[in-house]
Image (cartoon, rainbow over all chains, first blue to last red; front, side, top):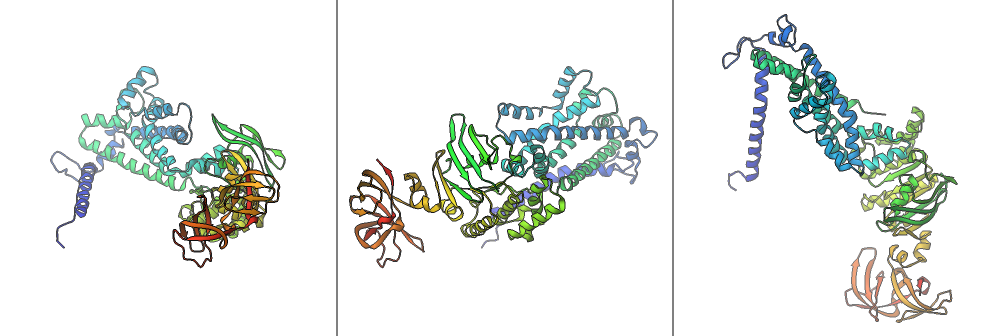
Length: 272
Length: 341
């Protein structure tokens, strides 16, 4: 045989190369940001003066200087808002996804459209909120509702696909014939069996809401400054390294959130 | 276990009639098979007993108690599906203990009950496994244990063996059949496989197009089918035109003396392949098709008048080829009149 590569192994090499490139494009900026957040100066191409926690301290509002613009409270504020939005989606989105998958009913198509409709850009929903609820749009409550609405399609679509892969009707009928009421069936059988999808939906809605900028920028008026606004202001005014620290903190938070949600997903639903 | 009674059930979906004028009783401790082609209403019948369908008209009774409008979770019926429908978020043991848990049985007791059932079904070693890691046959055993754990009024089985391979089906059929007998379970066994129903059930109900065609023991259904549909659906059958005349059956190509009742006129009769002896009679049949099946050879032959006749070529010395002419005799006792004009 010849020593020429077969088309199949060529394709494999090409895919590996493309995947590697894409990963590099994604990961390098994050790594650079993370590393330089510990540098003293970033005026040149290569940041210098390692290692300092000064920017992290400033970003977290732990120094006197940073107290003015630090994100200390803002970061936790955003975490709370995103968590609130995620819970609204769990409570509303999971039953909607269930109904859409399990039942044929009048208006099903409409509900399906409505559930996916908030996939509008945040800026548009922001304007709509400002016009409709001028007094409440910028409050914590308004932000939670806005985040929940904006991210609900991700929850509904992900959970719906989990439900579609299950034999919902027979699972439900088995549980009910064994004496479980409908609500109990839903909580002890249906939801735990879809936990993969529910988990994915939770992670997506949380991380997207935690850094939502457009909507926040449109409606924000008072109260602690959400994380995305802090970042925006620091990119325009403050030195890059402080933003780098803030972005790094955000990434740490996202990783932590994913770990927490996965742990909950693995252990939190099991019933005996 | 109780007697379950369906009284004049009708179920319609819009203009579609799924079941019409259905009267059916499953006696205490009996396994009643429900067979018929797809769309005949057998699954609707099962779901009506389970409470997932409310009949448009008619009554459902458990031991004389009207349960027509009682919700499924209060009926205490065991369900076994073709697709198993096990709870993948729980261990095998927790699946079986789920029903007793819903009934409020104490933890230690429901555990004991689950273990006992798993032992009975010969899968005790699977107790801590996740259902999705089991084979189809094992999953179906778990499904059965789960349904039996609530000590159901009636056990409803919906095509429980359809997804399994032939050998396993045969083994499970025998095991489950004797287990249900032993436990004295009242059961409704829905299947499209008439052979499975014959093997497992005390009585069989044949449904067609939403109507009950006949209900009786496997032997009654097979040997005295009520009509052409039942004769054709259960086992293989030859439906032949005949002239009845005072105890004789004139098939055109032969006359038989055996029919006890004294009706006269045009009729359709059923002759099973088992009642046709090949190589001993005087009726010439030309073989047109045959299938060698190992234990038997199934063939379709042509009668002198051009009608087709299904027969079996067991134990004949003759070499079977298409075009061979064999002589056959029809056992008069095996002839059943199904339709008189």
